[in-house]
Image (cartoon, rainbow, N blue to C red; front, side, top):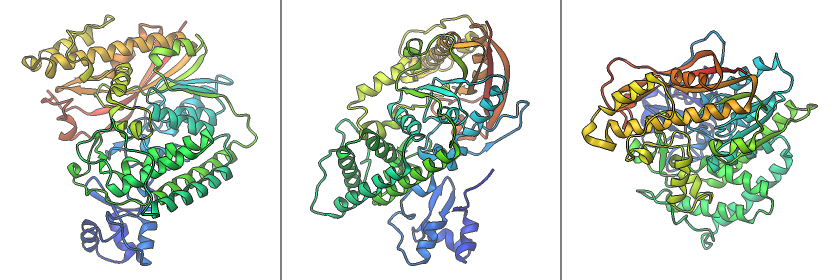
Length: 519
């Protein structure tokens, strides 16, 4: 695994500034040196150390810019292990995108690496000319960007409007003039700094009235900065400029707040982290925008002389609108990773971006989105009557029956409620496969990255179940390739979703389910 040489570990940083590890650790704990806590370890941005050694004071919370120099701060800090498989596919972990141009713009809690997508497309292009690639759960656009770079036409669906915005901005990067972005950055940051530094000036934008958190989401000073950003953004006359700034702000929003992803959105103080009292948002966004301009320059140099393919992102539910948007029998390759059977709230965990970027106004907007999401959520289906499978699959039926007997006295809060969630999830898997089969060409390849899951102590080998479901719609299983496995501690096994004593040691893993559409 390669590490960013600009981010130092404790021993590396201690050697760099020529003090003992014990001394540096003590300084880190008392915020006397620029650093960031990552799980149980410390990380030190080399540039921030250089500035500190030159006499620049440490900000109230340590590292200048707070979380931004640390890159994908939203990602859970979980060690991953890659084992080669018979396909030779790359590790799917999204963390590999941290240093990749364009891919690094927006942190995302899930997804797969650009190298993984490139591997799949490179193999498939050997037998086909120009490919049409589809990602039904596009996230922040990894599949779409790699498809364009490989000379493929691409389309994606993403129900989360913030993620869909990131996709759109990334797609437009292939056509945007880097100098135009640098000019935008200079003008925007100058205006923002002038307003932030004018203590007598108050922003016109207001805190989203529907956004509620247990503790104040931002400190008063940071909140003022964010509101001024929104003022400046609203004054931009060009939609692309507003979108670019909105995506940049969204990418750092949680990093300068009093909340964090551990991996779900929660208070920093609950994760043992100090609150963020100050963040130099003009400098943070300036760095972000300039990095984006530099990435676009690299991307355009790479693509020089090539005809750009077509790409489109729909901020809609694949399950609802794909049959209308996509012509039957037109997709050569489908690459995606749907939500897992783990009740992770992609919608709720992007609430800050949803509200502060004006995608939603009230909680009912989020609820409507949740009810349209793939797999739904336990909270939306737990109290329904017993939900049956919409298709026949005896192995899944047996697992559901077993789950319904766990803590049955607790009703929707015990096994019966979780069985409803699992049944709904697999019903959506079936509906997904039905739609995908109609859209794909004969002999087309579908690669679906999905993992096993634990509900109430019971393991569901979701990858195997998904492959079996797909067979019922004309897909042949080309392979189930274990591409990633994770260490599982008690915090994972005994979470609110998985609580219960597993009958045997269970290892969480991810599988690339490779399917071939048969006529």
